[in-house]
Image (tube, rainbow, N blue to C red; front, side, top):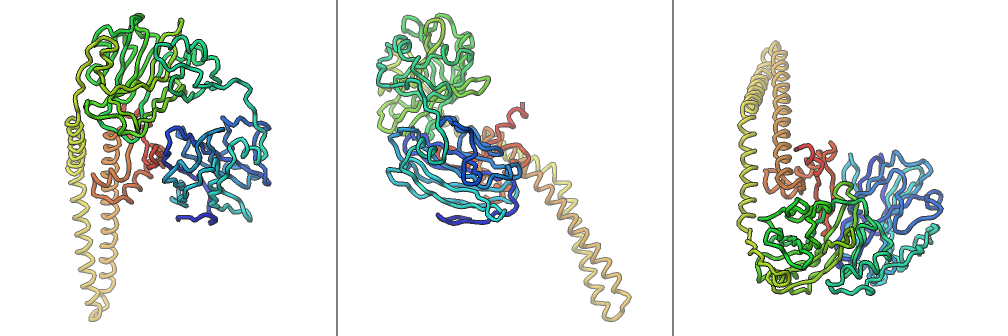
Length: 535
């Protein structure tokens, strides 16, 4: 059901409800966050003081890492809770508004009953900083859903205060990007001057030219995973890594990592398409800087085909988010861009957000560090071959399943044919009952036997078809790196979108995956948990 603003609907048999928020940010650093608040008798149920940067979720409400997917276990809610409201906040002192969003949609699903409601959020004005999107509320001991879409010009601090919450005011000095020189030659100096000013120790939002000391703030982190996300996706954009020595040079071509040379000597750095795995303790002692950059394989193409590029850093072992750097690229006429530097600072390591581009591509990088970079091969053909291989694998799976199930299918089809024959004879005897009553019991017996054979054969055939379809879907999940959409299934199998969605939902109900929303607001199914089972 698609709701309009102000509409309220009754929800029967409240169980586990899944909520997905999907939108497209027109600004890469918009940083809209969604929060859930529980109310009792008109007051928010919360601690005496709250940190606006770390708002806790109510009991029985959970949120995934993307921040866009919520689960509410209504049977586990306290009986005193009579309202759960979902708000959206921009960061304090943000110079953006909610007008910088498009294609905003909210989907509410029951884990058993399916889709409850869909809400298309219209555009906000250029003064809106916060919004109440929708709420669950209890009326006459039954739960209802109300679509609000109420915008506020106040920021998150003022809205929290209006909700009756006491906000903890930060007493530390905030980081000022303008205090840091952007020149890459000043890495160590600026880091010593300003790293002490950074007061956020989790998922630091780096700005261009900003430094962060890993030794000071993440001293126990020795292995880091760096993941690049390009919006929209560019197939020929390659992630590269350069190891630079104390003389600001590259020792030899083996210290330049690309798709044909993915591991640095000593195994301290490993490249895997859009990810880089770094073990700080295993980096060679003569290497003082590790530089991460992205390059279009064709020297005539530019990075401005993407809206922005995001680089996220996490602890490889604990999955703790360390930092992220977002670089807008829409007006950048570059073929190559340096995103981030890891560099030695004293006895430890620091990172620096660079964001420096080169229209001359890797050749300019080679001139700077005095080495001859390789020519990156255009792998469009190999990508096509990979898709062809995937199609062949799926076709092979289909053919194998058809051969394996042919005997069973033929057996049950023969039983269906027998059922038609028996019911036909039963119909004939039924006609004869008009002349002789003795034929009536025989007709009933044959009709019943025929109907039983038909039902049994139909159920068996449906079970085989479902097993065959599930096997094909699991094969596709593995072939698509454990991320899949109903459209991809429908285009490769003889099913419609609804049947494909039903199968993916069934697998999620078995605990094999979950729905997620990408940065463009599209829903997909994530089965990453199956990776461990396949090893």
